[in-house]
Length: 83
Image (cartoon, rainbow, N blue to C red; front, side, top):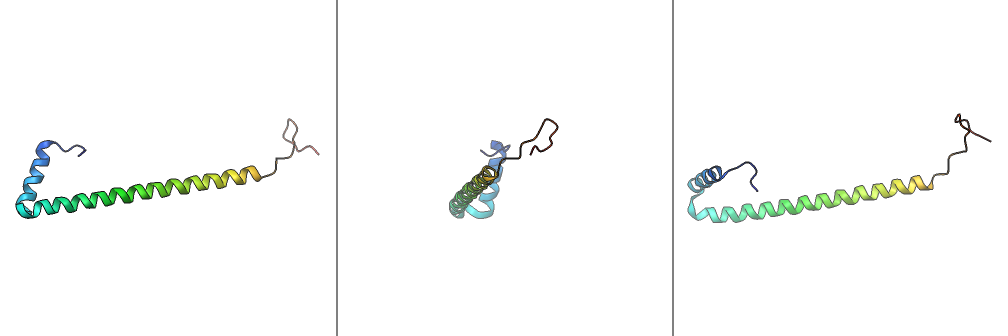
């Protein structure tokens, strides 16, 4: 979950935060951080969903354009158009 951070590193970060913010502010800070991360994750998921919808719409548009184009004219074995 924390990538390459081990228990010792997390403990040191917690102790520094405890010293800087104090024991009364730390739970409030944790809640705020949790809410912020949840909002970030929600926004990221929404952006991903929007991106996928746009890509899907563009693919459908390309399929419609290519299927609506007329068939190429008949050619001989050398690639010359046959009338």
